[in-house]
Picture (cartoon, rainbow, N blue to C red):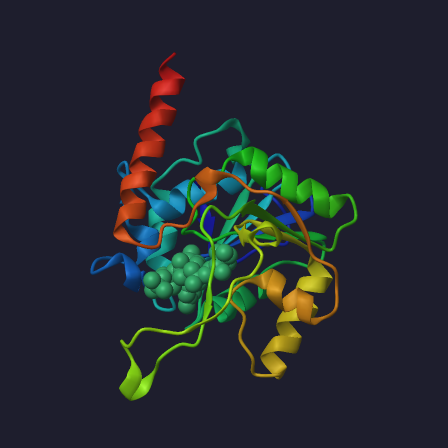
Length: 264
Ligand SMILES: Nc1ccn([C@@H]2O[C@H](COP(=O)(O)OP(=O)(O)OP(=O)(O)O)[C@@H](O)[C@H]2O)c(=O)n1
Ligand SMILES: C[C@](O)(CO)[C@H](O)COP(=O)(O)O
């Protein structure tokens, strides 16, 4: 894997990149507990970020990957990516670029987007914290954008019933929270990444939200505020987000199952 300091506006093949993946990887991983920045923590001996880059590079359509590193960690991330092979025959057609991120996921994605050349028509935004997303899910999202949807999110139905509550804050923090509603579960979806976008639509959404000084927890939510239709395609249970310590246990189990399956 070779991580160039600047993008040349083309995939490693020399052809202009048409589909790029932006991987926000600048988070600290506070919910995971003390340790290195989350994206750099190992899963089966390989940093989470490397798994995520491989998942994007494994997609036939992605020819440019923009990794968004912790604000002061771009050089370290470049060195780390150089130390790991992309592990696949597609490595010679995927360019990997590293840029420094920001204080929020939103800011990090915006900085990653700024490194995507205008020749790119489709942008996938994928959390480094979802390292085990199957390539088929990546391909399905990219294909739906290419087929004309300006914004596509992979998602799964919920297993739990969800309650809306009145949060207790300040002096009342910690008190039981009154339930104010129960949304109909069949209408809800748990949204994953990669989320795929028409590049110009995603850029416009980030510009609008930055101007308005608002925040959103995912990129599709920003596009919704533009009034542009967002559609859902099936997600995958292995695309879960590594957020808390138990998620690491699950991730190791998924990798062990993949190794066992590869052995047969
Ligand atoms: N300033 C930030 C914050 C988050 N992210 C990235 O956004 C993705 C989803 O964020 P999350 O899982 O919430 O990661 P953290 O912010 O690291 O987690 P925590 O909230 O527990 O600190 C991750 O790949 C994370 O690296 C980012 O690029 N820049
Ligand atoms: C983008 C995301 O992964 C979609 O589910 C999610 O919103 C990220 O949230 P986080 O709090 O930054 O982990």
